[in-house]
Amino acid sequence: MIYIFLILTTLYVLFVLVLLMGWVSIPRFITDKTSDKTTFISVVIAVRNEEAGILHLLKDLELQSYPLRKFEVIVADDHSTDHTAALVKSFSDRSELQVKLLSLSAMNGASGKKKAIEKAIEEAQGDLIITTDGDCTVGPDWINAIQDFYIKNKATMIIGPVTFIEKENLFTQIQKIEFASLIGSGAACLQLGIPNMCNGANLAFEKKAFYEVKGYEGNEAVPSGDDEFLMHKISAAFPGKVVFLKGKEAIVYTPAIQTLKDFKNQRVRWASKWSFYKVINIKVLAVFIFLINFSIPLFFVFCLCGLLPEVLFAEQLLIKMIVEFVFLNRVSLFLGGRIKFIPFLILQVIYPLYVIYFALAGLRGCYEWKGRTLNNVKF
Image (tube, rainbow, N blue to C red):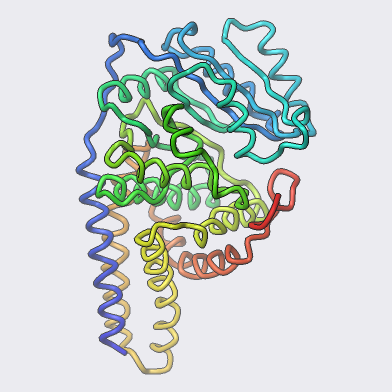
């Protein structure tokens, strides 16, 4: 029993150290604001009931340092029941920003985020597609950073950094730390040649590559995963051409979840796509992470039963906590702030149970999102 525990924790500590090396080895990218703006870009925003945030994003896009004549914005409205479409139309009428509004309700029953993005790409004039979400905010050099990186790296797909807009409450701070772990580990794994995670709030890819890999074909039954499934297909078709953009100007900011119910639905939505991954090393990694987190409460029970020395258990957990803190702090510093210790400590306690719960809930794959009840079988 002791040897199993030591092997698992040692493997995990080594894994986090490898992630740290992967993250550190990603070169920092500084945008050249004087570079040629040669690429016409289509910014695609799939929205459903985003009246609270869509104008903030459109105003951010209106203030981009990238020339307004060199990019367009396509908002694909997925059957919103609020004023999202009206706000976009009103903004478009009075702005110099090239904004096109598409309505899925007029497209023979088409619905879902994947379908919204597909329809927007069909209308897109740009060679490079950038996707983000309707509740996000971006800095003035966001598009410029992506285009500059695209040209200099000859990338087919660009994974951009995303972080939560922090509010002074414990719930948000815990979410921000956890989200930093997802962004950092996804970027590090990509750097190490194992692309596994990305976020559609900050994603760029060539339009021709999207069609070459047949877009979302094969994943239509999964409501989520428009970002990661596409990344897996493009990385397989274009080895070495999927790259993480580690640049401050490229960071996208998204609001944290404010209620436990919405938090649960979001995490089940994220977890529900893991069983549909077709790449074996990604599945192995997911199982490994699950086993590590499952083993912690299990071995804690063994300690209570006298089957495992308490000192050994505490020492291994301390080592695990230290290496995780170092890694997450490096990622958080890039994203805009140091880790706060109290939220980090609380997350250390609850995270194993959290992973077990959402891994199992994700297998069922049923959740509510933006006024719909979704599952992994059909929309």
